[in-house]
Image 1 (cartoon, helix red, strand yellow):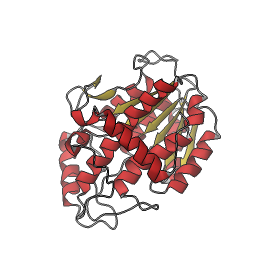
Image 2 (cartoon, helix red, strand yellow):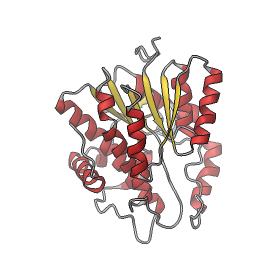
Image 3 (cartoon, one colour):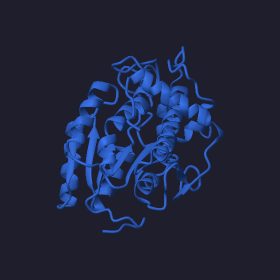
Length: 302
C-alpha cells in the first residue's frame, strides 16, 4: 500500500508514545488505518488495550501491540524499550507523549524536573535504547513532537533544575525546546555516522486537548484550565493537528533535519518551516545532547 506521501507503508512498524489521548491517539488511529503495525507505548495500559481493541474492530487485519511506558521513570523507559526491541526492526518512532502541568515544582522518579523528565529525557533514553531496532530497519525515522512554545523559551537554560519559584509554562517551553534541539541533533549525528536513520521535528500548532489540565497534587491550575477552555473553541481538532506528525513519519521527500508545523502557524496543513533562532543554535543542541547523556547515563551508539 502506498500512501499519499509516496511510501509503501503496509507492514511498516511504528511506535507511538502517549497514544491513548489527543494527538497520540489520532496518530495511532491513522497509522493503523494506513496498514502499519502500531505499538502503543502508554502509561495507562488498560486504556491502551481498550484503544487496541477499538482499532482491531475498525481494522481487523491490524497488528496493534501495547507496552507500558512511564516516561517519568527511566527504569520503566528502559524496560519498555527492551520489550519493544524484542518485537523486531522498527521503522518509525514517534516521540509524541507530553506533559504540561500548572502548579508547584514536581520531579520524576530520578529527581528531574517533571516537564523536562517526561517531555525530553524519557524520550532521549527511549530513542537511545531503541536505536538497534531502528537501525535494523532499511530506512528508519524518528519524529520528535515539540511545541510552538519553544519559540517563547528564549535561549536554552542549561541548569535544568526548573525555576524557583516554579513557573510551569516556562519549564514546559524549555522542555519543548530541548525536545526540538535533540531531534535536530539526532539527525546531524545520524548523517555524520552514515546510518539509515532520519530525524524530523514537529510542532502541531494549537490543538484542543487536555494537555494543560491540572493533575492531582497540582496547586492552582487556573492558567491551564483557561487554555483548555479557550482551546475547545478556537484550537484545531486532534485529527487536524496530527497531520504534521503523520507527514513527518511517512513523507519520503523529507530527508531529515526538518521542522514541520501548520501552514498558518496555529492551524492548517503541514509545511516545512524555518526554525526560530533558538532552534538554529547548533551549540545549544550540542549542550542538550551532552547534558542528556550526563544526567541519564545513556549514550547513543552513533
